[in-house]
Structures are given as structure tokens and as C-alpha cells.
Amino acid sequence: MASGGFATSARLVAALALGAQGIDCGTAFLATTESFAHDDHKARVLAAKAEDTVHNDIYALNWPPNTPVRVIRNSVIGGLGPNLMGATAPPLPSAARGDRGSLE
Image (tube, rainbow, N blue to C red):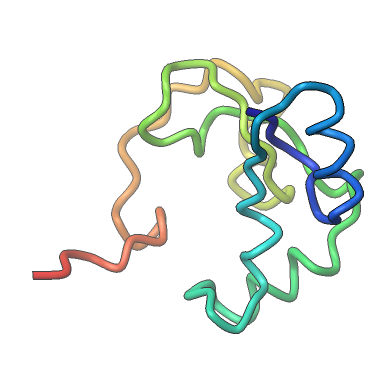
């Protein structure tokens, strides 16, 4: 399984040629009309360039410690200073995580 940077069919073909059996391309679908992401978030993702992003682990919810994720730089990331990995943030409230709450 390959993950990261798959936004075109050519990259899928390349990953398969290199031996991957599939790809993970979640961000590619974030800005679609079917996505529940907020329109402002969709616009920021579409406008972002690679240099606008950083690897960190503060948003790596439900993943092992020190699992890097790429995010667009924001005020939370700015508050971490140079300590982008190994962050021990308190549990984020569901609204900050983007949870839509219980479906019950």
C-alpha cells in the first residue's frame, strides 16, 4: 500500500508499477462536493502549496505516538515552535477534531 501525494492517475500507475497493490488518497477527495469538510477548509487545501505544510504528530489522533501527518501550517502548529514531533497535547475537544458527534 502506498500513501501520500496521489492526486493523479499517473501517480497511481507509477505506484502500481513499483509494486504497490493499492494507494491511499484521502486528501484528493477532501475538496469534492461529497465531502463534509467545511468550504473554507476545502479552499485552504486547494490553495496550499507544499511549502505551506509541515509534518507533525499533534493531529495524529488514534495513531501510535510519533506518527507524522502533513498539515497546513496554522496557529496551533505555530504555537509548537520547533517541537513538531513528540507533542503531548491534551485530548482535543470533538469540535477541534472536526468530529460530527454521535450518529445515534
